[in-house]
Length: 169
Image 1 (tube, helix red, strand yellow):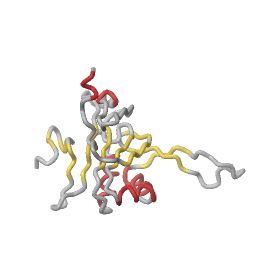
Image 2: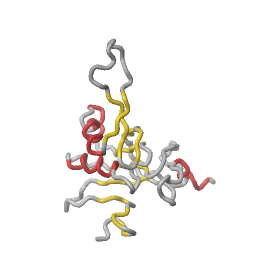
Image 3: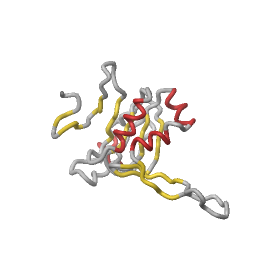
Image 4: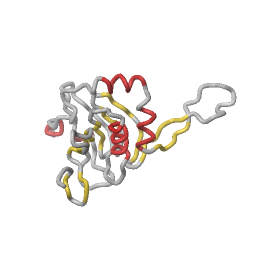
C-alpha cells in the first residue's frame, strides 16, 4: 500500500553515515584476515567472524572515513539485519561504546531484516523492514541517542523492561 512509504526515516533531513554489515541480534559478522593465509600471498576475502557490539565499535571507531563523518555529527545508520532486535544487544552496545568515546551522533538500527528502500526525500519504506523474525510486531528502526546533560542515554521508541517505555523511570 502507498502508506508503506509515508513513514519518514528517523534520520530524515540529515546526511547519514551508512554502515552495511551482516548481523544478528547479538553480534555483527565481519570478514577478518587470518594470520598466515593465504600462503601464496594472494589477496583473500577473509573469513567471516562474529564480533559483539563493543568489538565492532572498536573496528569502526578507528576508521578515518568514519571519524570524518563523526566529526561532522552525521547520524549513523546500521544497515545490519536484526542488530537492534531486543533479544540481543549488538546495536545498543555498539552505540554505547561510541557514545562513551564522546561521539554525540544518533545511531539508528533495524529490529528486523533489512531490505531498505530510501526515497530521495528521506522517507523509508516500512515494508523494507519486513516482519521481525523474532517478534510478532513489524520491524522498525531504533534510535540510540548519546547521553544527555545528566549523563543518561535515551533510546527513542525502545523498551527498557517488560512493557516499560524508555525514559519512564
